[in-house]
Length: 105
Image (cartoon, rainbow, N blue to C red; front, side, top):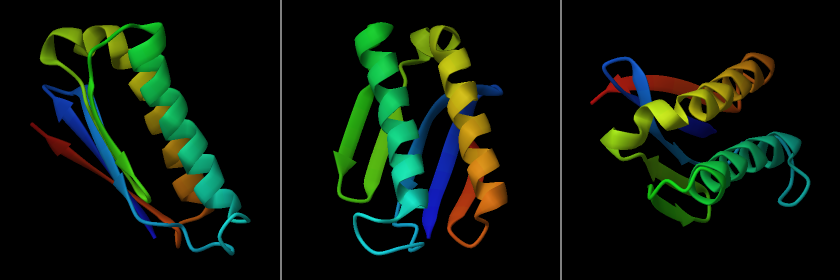
């Protein structure tokens, strides 16, 4: 199962941590894992490469953590809201493969 924890600072998205594998198919053929991976990489790349935010990003097989600088939360809010919306919709379609939670920092 993929577990995603969105962090918020006073209700504003401040980052996310994702770990695990969906287990909806064999390696290389798991459409749930591919959809989630594509969404989180696009989000991380948009924040760092398009918006130019110096976010802390940690990534390895089945794991990604993105922490936004507090001074940049408002600039990244729309991108992060889009990721949250997308992953929430996927979790609704694949509740056995994706779990989403939220925490305040």
